[in-house]
Length: 245
Length: 245
Image: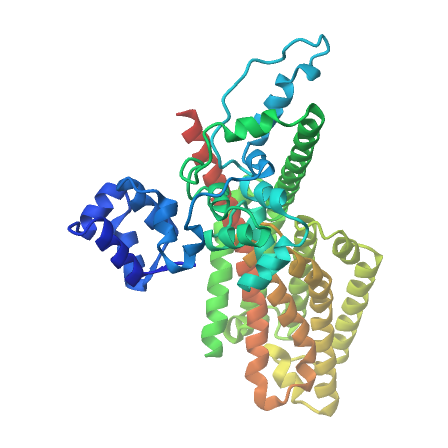
């Protein structure tokens, strides 16, 4: 859901009473035409509020919580679950973590050297996040709550996309912290959502060798499927070019 | 209005055929150039003025009309082969090139030639309208002749239709999907032409519209696939240069 221009103007008055639209665009890096268009249409995107909050050193989550549509974000940050944290670790990092486990080395010595996890989000972070919090019925509940058709929802997940509105609705339907969805979709950073700096690393370290290897295997399998489908699509397109191009 | 439609179709088809000459000379998909060239010839032969000039040169016995039918058969056969191969429609390919397809083509051709010979066809007239007006017997024969001439294109169009409908929903480049939609629409139009005998004569213009819609859909559809290939080549060379930098 977008935010109304009226509520946005009121919020802007509160944080930068004397700034002109041009000033706001300059400090936040938003294109003037983009903001002008959003104001004319009366629909301000979540990304706009996040960019402006960052420019004025405000927490974007707190800023969003001031708008009616995102009032669920208000209050002290709720801690993410362990599986949510792990879902925000990229597949490459998970595989690296598997190799770094002593169990993977036949001589039993310490494996690969330690490394720093790349920041969230990653290439399949949205899908992995929903999988991590899904009890099997979450998709239905989100669809019932928002009126978005299940196939449209699935299509967004496959494309590793989710609108901020759906991300928050998904978190609520699964009973997890609403800000997590915004992290997985890359709208806000882990830090902004109140995740401790090494929370993901700690969640990763707490996994047993078996759990980690199984998860990495699942991710690898999903990645393989996606790659194969892309290759098949490519081959089909090549065939069309070859015969009709 | 009908004249405009006819000459526009001729111009579009002729331009695309001419545009394919360079690639045909390079040896890329020569049969595609053949399809466009045959279609251009077919449109030329179906317009009153050029028809009369050509037929008079051939002796004024409407042999040009018979030629037109076989030019259409040739174009639609190669189109069927290329499209079914390109879109991986193996069933359609087997149906068109296999025993069934050949039997249909042979039967239709025999009927077409036999009916043509059974008529007194002297006196050039586009669409055999003058021949049809001679007497009741000739009227019926021209109807059969027309039906036979439409039967083979309809057979090929119907064979391709399921694959085209599938391709529209597939994960293919957008231009290719639009092209598949146009080819499907063309197929529907060709199939509708089977209903011409039951269309009341007051709606005679509908026949022209259906015919030229079919031709335009096929020609533009094929040209779009070609355009999509050119576009994808450009995109891939652009990507290569940008990664090299």
